[in-house]
Length: 104
Image 1 (cartoon, rainbow, N blue to C red):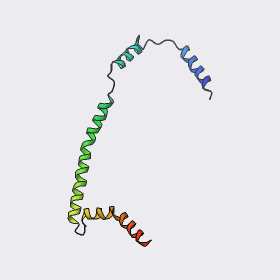
Image 2: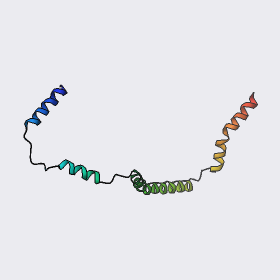
Image 3: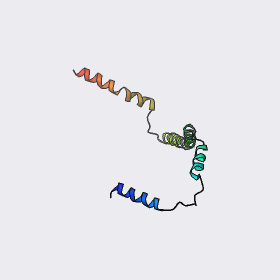
Image 4: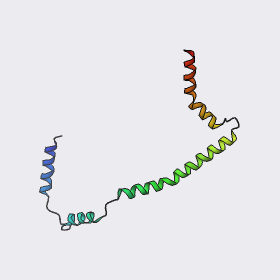
């Protein structure tokens, strides 16, 4: 459909109608003045409100995961020493490099 033709038809129909007295005088100006009087939303306060609302669920998740970690390590008797495992993992590349140098 041709948009220009549609626009001309709509404008012609609107002009053919009589002016209605249902809308009060300067109604749009009063509405615009009312909208300008509203305070602008503060972006920082919106962020702060959202972060404070998210704090409680985050603390709850942290406590649940901490309890799960504590109780799973307490019940697991075959668990090895964490610092020793960490050291072995970090130094695994060094051990491999030393064994490769001794082969050559």
